[in-house]
Length: 210
Image (cartoon, rainbow, N blue to C red; front, side):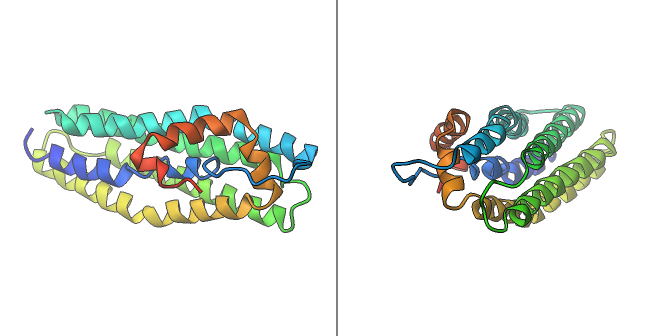
């Protein structure tokens, strides 16, 4: 279906930074003192990091699905189904991470920890809501009319580009949350190291490493 894939490629390009937010939680090396961070903080970091790999994988798979479909000669119905599921998975992934961070609570012994945590939760929940809204828009596209479908998909791609500000805001909120011993505690977690190692091998996500 000539005229649909070029737009979906634009959508895939807009999505290429989607997993960067998650990597921001795990991409920085430890500068811990010999005595190490507070055990309570380590326990907090573990509860957060244990929720990261599965959701990071879900978000990355959603990006990959859209990119793969964009590279194929896909019918509008296939593009719609793929993009809809991808947006749903991304919404679920960001929502799950926001929930995990919220349930972990403010990091122990961190000044303004509650505010920093709330900023992270707010950012991820906002992203989840945005992707859920994009799914609804994709579901409502007219696949029987190629011109209308391409136009609708173009609008979705434009909104994805605008979502970059939310991605940046979320990344910044994560960086502010992981300062001092928080960063050291996170760096000790095998689950977060796993995500960081995977990110180092990916040009689209590795740039977020601190």
